[in-house]
Length: 336
Image 1 (cartoon, rainbow, N blue to C red):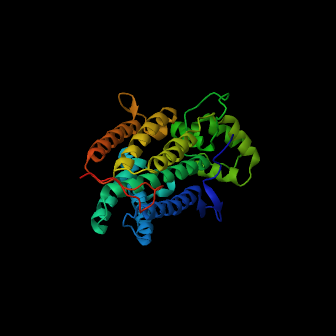
Image 2 (tube, helix red, strand yellow):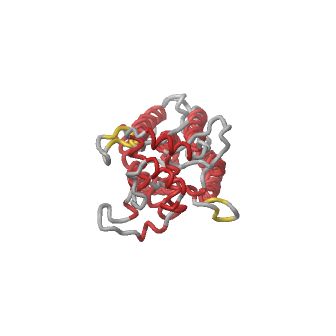
Image 3 (cartoon, rainbow, N blue to C red):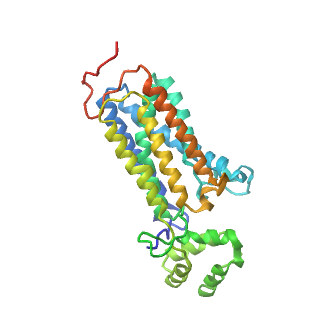
């Protein structure tokens, strides 16, 4: 299967249109707000409908800021020192070049929840629980967008693997490896003489020509691409869909506030740790400590945080929140 020809879901001009990521964010935020409102109403948690939508809106801003800063801090420090004479002027703001960190987004969400808990007078662990459920939903849509956009590629695999895919975005690896001297790019230039191998946006030019219907270039490129693990689908299922279902099933019954968030941290960290084994090291940051990638190290830290949530909030003398399947009027056993 060949995927990722175009990062746009709908392109109006060469540089303007609706990206797959934009569509993914829209779906995740709308459905996330509806899920939060549904659970809050069933639990009579004190969140108004307006606050449910505000929570999602603020979370969208926090994810954009925290995700980008997290990527720059954890994966590409040089972006902090890259300045240019054209918009967006600073490497950190060059979102069109990609680069977001899930762990940076989580830190930003945690800071947001601390503020909203104080501002609205809502239980902090309960806000963490609501964000955990919608966070899993968000990961599902974002990883699907990564798959359709050809980002976060997997490691090369034998073509006999039944779900192996080819992604044209592999050409960016070639550019990093040898630039215009890379044999793969030289072969493409023979097929399409108009290509300028010295152009700084060579990769984008090739993808644009292919998306516009240059079949000869597409065939030449496809023949040189490696078969890879579809790690984005693994992530969409493991980090997103399955965790969302598990958390919703577990929250059908009453739980102490903070337990659902702790379970999310555990499930996500385990899923992410395994997925990094199949992800291309160029995207994961490569080996960092004891042969582990940066993503695996951060997943380990999140696992510890999940254990702390379960130990601290799971053992506290807190009144359990009603499960969403029981409704707001259920009588919960309260400890004397």
